[in-house]
Length: 605
Image (cartoon, rainbow, N blue to C red):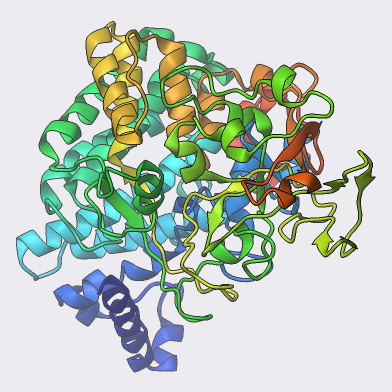
């Protein structure tokens, strides 16, 4: 239903534009401004005006970069995991390889550079906000449309501030006739941008509905944004440093205030929002966690980024065709290949460490069933990651590389067989960095060989588990340990894993890492905690993959197949380093040349 509504609204905007004569358009201000009173005098067309900018906010899809070189929403969903300690990718365009190696220059980098397109979206929201002030439609409808535009604008500023720090705060439509200082604004301090986002969320809360169509924000989406923005502001105040004469950073004296704002917003949403942790399949915790991300409109999700999923029309995603197993989907092979170290983070169901026992399982001449290796893991492991023998579409994922023959020799090669058994599993990617683990989260397994741009599952932007983790983190810093433990154990209970008996900062961060894995949080979390320099330095913490070798003898028994396992380097381009300067992306030499008021550049560039 929501896809039909969004498509209808977009078509109505196009119809309004088409009814305006060419001469009329040329006589008006810039062409992205629909200066037709009928747009703002009607609730439906005024709402329709917001459809294009909402669709353009592609950064809501796993921090997707704005550049779509190869087509709509192609590869970029893997970028943010590939620069974190979650994994890597075999497609290192868009500056991902440079960013992983810390080589971001002030001359500019395409990595996560969203400046111009996001400011264009902000301008569209400002147009709506200004024109709606004098709209004759009902006050309630007018206020809600304005609130939706302000929410979208706040989301845009959050996307900017967590990348660049201090940025210009533009809340009115700019025209070429405006004064020079308005056309070439200075950067507003990082703290003031966070305050703006938090205050906007408070101001618009009562103007938004309690629930909204999927793809549109309700009041709880504003509260969720407030929770997340305050979490970042508190972290920067506590662990960051003030620089550029106060333009970057937040004084440490403000940390408690922001932690309290985060706590209050999170607590309000949890208690009053009417959301609940998804638990539709309580007896199958793996399936339950998988379905959470493809069961649209479920009880946990506060706001979705919507997709059309119909060929090349509308807003579409190629998520399935790139993330699924190599032999089972078009272009498959796992665009994000997951590190063994990330797989190790998932505990066992009983709460003990789930890290691979290398001394036991990688010993010479030994082979094991996959259940013996991974069978005790947190259900979120197989809900988030697929590996050798993961069930898939009535079969299994087969990514072994090599056969151990009865005489002890290793039989290797591509499309070569020993007694009818392939030496390499059909899902073993070629030299593109297969680590033995790929991302399963969000993949819609029911698709049989999905073609280009057919993924129609929406992307949850805010969900209740994140808000509980936000609250738990705030509780730790506010010394509310009992509440922190309660929220963490709620998340663990839904996952099907033993509760914790005590809590501290590291345990909260650990839970966040596994629960929110591959959702676009990890790289930004490491940055706001100011620990990315330690966690993303391969010289200090090397990353690995896992190679599976099929034991031929185990095939003859008719029981579960067995595999030798060994550690291998952590995938394609396996070198990571995070310099201090990367806590802020560069403004860019070209932008500062065009607008000297943006100077000075962020530190280190």
